[in-house]
Each structure stands twice: as C-alpha cells, then as structure tokens.
Image 1: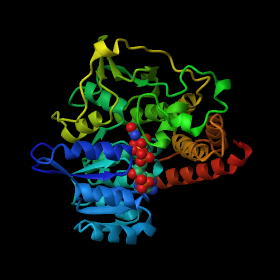
Image 2: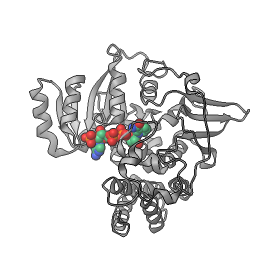
Image 3: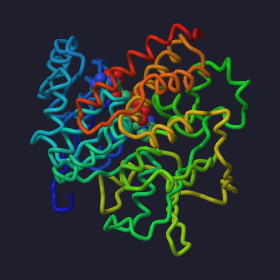
Image 4: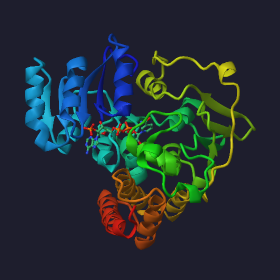
Length: 394
Ligand code: NDP
C-alpha cells in the first residue's frame, strides 16, 4: 500500500464490533486513508449513522428490503453516498475499483462470497471473517494467490503470528505455532456446572469486547478450534504444528517457535484496533489509539492447557481438520446453527458441542475441491443441525 496517496477502505460488517474498531483506526488517519465503502447486514439505521460520520462513496445493506430506507436515510442526511442492497452488491463493491483495501468483518459463512471476491480482485484483504477460511480455506488462499491479494489476518492470534514471522513470509525454520486462548468466561469450570449457563453469561467475555457469535464461540472454545483451522490455511502448517495454550490475561496474543529454540511472541492490550492498524498500515506502523503495555501493572502472565473434557469443541475442530474435505465446513455450519439457537434460548450451552458432533457424524467428510461442494456441505449441515435442535431443548 506504500505509495498510495489515499488508501480507500471497504469495511464489510461496518456496524459490528470489528467494523467499529476499523472505522476508529481509519478516522485517526484522515490524510492517508478513508472509508470508501460501508456494508452491513440489516441494520439500516446504524449504517446511515456511520455514513453521516464517515461519508463513504457507497453504502450497501445485504437485506434487500432495507434498500428504500437506506436510500432515503442517506438523502435525508444530505449525503452523496450511493445506496445499494443485496449480497451481490457487496461482492461487486468489495472487488470493484472503489476500494484498495477490504476489511472482511461480516460474521459467519455469510462473509464467504465477498471475502473471496476481494481476494480474486487482488485487494489488500484484512481478514477477520474466520468462518470463510474454515469453510473454504484452500480456495480462499488460491484465490488470493491468483488474484495477487495480500491477506493480513485480523484475528489477534493470527495477526500476532503474522507479525512474528519473517517479513518475506517464509515458513522455513518454524517448528510450531502456539495460539493463545483466554479460556473465555467459564475457564476452570467443569462440564457439570455448565449445563445452565445463560447466553448473557456466555457473551460476557472477561477480556475482549466482541459480537455475540464469536463471544459464545470463545466460551465453548470453538473459537480456538476455528482459529486452529484458520492458522493451518494462513500459514501452510499441518495441524500437529499448531498448538493451543490457555493464557487468561490475554496479553500474549500468540507465539512462533523456531527450530533453533527461539520463541517469538507478540504482546499488547486486548484491543482489536492494534491488529487493524497493523493491517491498514503494513509494512509501516501507524497509530491505533491503543496504549502500550505496562507489564509491571499487569504483574504476571499465566499459561495452562486447554480443558477439552469440559470444552469438547476444540477437540471436534481438530477432528474435522484431520477428516479434511467437507468436514470443517460441516463443523462451521453446525456450530453457527447451534450458537444461534443457544443465543435465542432454544438449546442449552452443553448442546452446542453435541449438535456439532452429531452433525459431523451424520455427514462424513467428502472431497471438497469446488465451491459448490462446500456450499452443498454447508447447506446440508445447516439442515441436519436445525432438524436436531428439537431433540435438545433448553
Ligand atoms: P458483530 O456481530 O459485532 O458484527 C457482524 C457484522 O456483520 C455486522 O456489521 C452485521 O450487520 C454484519 N452482517 C451480518 N450478517 C450479514 C450478512 N448476511 N451480510 C452482510 N453483513 C452481515 O461481529 P464481530 O464484529 O464480532 O465479528 C465479525 C467477524 O470478525 C466474525 O467472523 C468474527 O469471528 C471475526 N472476529 C471478531 C473479533 C472481535 O473482536 N469482534 C476478533 C477476531 C475475529 P448488521 O449490524 O446489519 O447485522
């Protein structure tokens, strides 16, 4: 991006938690970057409010029934921002000439097409939407290679590894990587005590402020499982060279161990603006609004092994990775269905891993060399998991 006078940034998922952090960083650099495209799912009012503040060229709402309200809201605000609606419009804007950089921060598999479109179009891709890598990692990495897109991971762990790896991206000399996990709000509890936890308790993450889906994923440790799969794709490593360590303070964001015995780690306060600033400024460092780390004030860094008996989702993710093919897509889709049902109070917390495991068992892994095969697996898994919900009442 060096050499561009003004970096034009498309923020997909602008009304979410990552979207807010990305807009915060962009707004700190009015001379070098601006938000040119803002996209959201269905929350027109929030999108219009962001447009008033950031004045993008284009705003798009995925829910087509929101088009008139978006168009009228922009006109009422006296903005020249063009209104669009529908998933295809998001894909077109993510790959079109109106942006240089795409922040892929739509939640869930709904982010797949726009992330792929940005990769194929050779954009700088700030990838927060981990589900798209879990669902179609090989195709995504191939699309980025062929399109000439640079992927900068925004997940804090992968961003940490990205920062610790040599600048030429060479994986040679890396023995293993270690993803840290906060352990979520229920760290230290055994399985029996998790039966009656509520959605409100599950989304109350001790260290990170995030959207509801990823917060529940953190509480089940599925988030870490999705991140292991994500790391294998991003860094070209087999699962046995990706480990997980629980680190409750969330200050060490991940580590890379090299063959000479060196281990490099990246540390910082748990605030996603750091990762976003790394992506927006790379290879330079730019202000993020995040304070430096005062280790004396924090005092200690603790580490422990993950408890996969209480939190089986991490084990299920490794199993899906080992099965390969469509299994990660099935894992992801079943998890999205189960988490959504849990957030709606329809199933209990302990049903999340059960639903995922049952769906994986019902749909053995098949080859996954085309996007259509993966979409079919995703759809099938959603059907199977949805049908199983009634067997697991809250
Ligand atoms: P939020 O729930 O806060 O935001 C989700 C965003 O996606 C909203 O802007 C929402 O729009 C939009 N959206 C939902 N459905 C669609 C759709 N069908 N089409 C277009 N846009 C849609 O999520 P987060 O910001 O927490 O997470 C976003 C992604 O980043 C996830 O993949 C998550 O795993 C990843 N991530 C998040 C981190 C965090 O700290 N939050 C850390 C690391 C990764 P609307 O408001 O209109 O519904």
